[in-house]
Image (cartoon, rainbow, N blue to C red; front, side):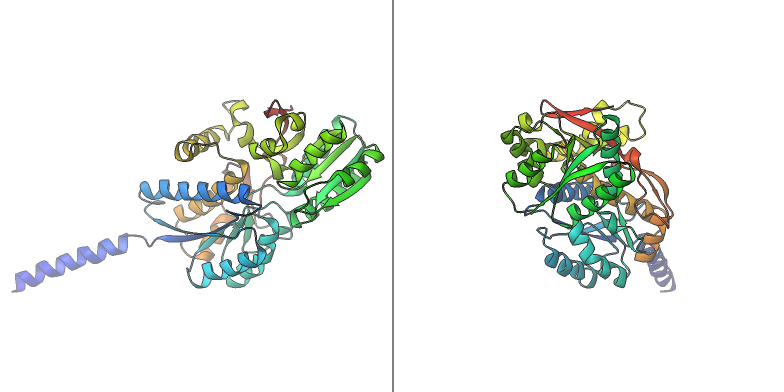
Length: 379
């Protein structure tokens, strides 16, 4: 009897030891605009995150910690984003959230993330998401003022002093417009036209007719699809041959498809290196990661990934690095992300600090030109 008791006791010890050694899974929430007008952002983000979680778990998790993923589709709706954020936190009990896809949605849920003390890694670009710094909020796309500066530096090289702006009337467009105007004044540019369009507008010939009359040296459009594609086609219809710059908000082949390769010919914009990874030197610090992402995504989905999917990739990488270092609670994950230091990502090389919760600079972008339906590096 004593021998049997000893055997059972030993088995229980091993059982409890095994339970103690098996790390509890980390639960990650995600909010993406998988459907609706911003689906070109949310669909590749969702696909990317699901792929990464599947790959991580197939390898036994992040240093033994399995990942549970809960993804909700916001449809690009601010009210829905708020409701689903509360659901992720209160019902699903996630330790971190990746997303949303748009600046407007992100700004709406920041107060919730801050109040509930859950790390939020946004996939939207608006500078106000992380400037000023919010303790629990990070983002993976480069700030829009970095993209604006990239455009203005190119315009300066080409001696394009008189500029026309046409920006979308949403949070992303308003932020870009604000940054462009401030930086243009600082660098000696003159804004000769300043037009705005609605996200739902299907024709911008009225705004473009005013811009044409102002005779700018270059036009800067700031928005996300489909508006910028409509503007590109309208310019061709009006015979406007002025140099057009687009924002990083359209840095995917979907824009070229919507605008048509013929109308988009010669357009320049700042884009993450993913768009032109095959044109980079093999010793570029991002090349190996970019190629690996492209190969994995193409194998899984039969299509090339977009810059926007890269935003979700980087969000997962930041969380993975934190978990690999032993972070488990929301507070531990937040602290680890802030202290990670240099991280090579899809969107650039991150250097996140307590004073900068984005950590990307001009090196995150390549200036690209659309040529015969594809990308070419300008310099």
